[in-house]
Image (tube, rainbow, N blue to C red; front, top):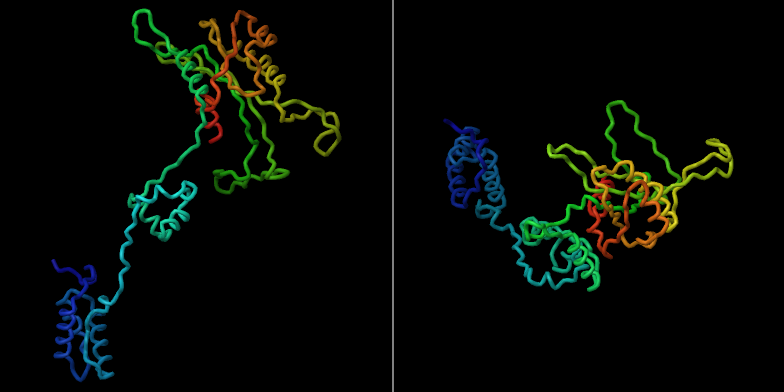
Length: 347
């Protein structure tokens, strides 16, 4: 099958081949000119384009016109190729971490360009790493974490192998600030749908509300059907206040929902008694009426485990609900800090 010259990859002619092409063209030239058939035949013979043949012939004619010795050697031999820079990466670890957070300072410290640094990263010479800051635990914190974890391990009467407690009677609570909106949000609109118009007094001071969330471990029956979702509730720290003055939107005295910006122990106690305990009584499975532990962190607004008013309300209706603290500086021991709030924030 005949292969078209234009479909082949253009080869790089050697200097001997270029000189041979010039001699063939010179022998078949007529009064210093070439026929189109001659150019095509030579191009087919060397598997190059007719344009390459014409360039060699014009280069030779230009040299003859200036009285120079004809030399149709390739000009590629005079192209200076940048040599590959060898970098000693053993010294990268000696560069301060503050200089290794972005590409530009690191490339400047190693004395290479930013483009070269990107190429070396793609080649695997350097490894990108995302680092998150960890809590600085003291020896007392580590001991408290160990004691807390060991308290969740039980030994079966029939088997000496220790197993973890099922934690079906543990409720995790925690607070989280949420902004009512974001300065920029992405929407997916159908054709001809109007773009949403959102307003705010100031983009820098968007209203935020603190929520108190309470969750427990979900439960399933023997067939895998969910009998308890574990969702106790999520309650905003808001209050109703009468409007001080009249406006075009409401008259004076109209009750408005306002966020509670300062959450104290009194506010926390009120929300635990009025919101959390009520939700537990209405959603908790009746097949388990043993002690129920509400685990909280060590924030200052949280009430003590021996709070008299809370304990009095927590023992009503046949329930035995108790407060407990998780170890200090241990947000990973609370499912809300570990996953739940992160999932809500991503939405």
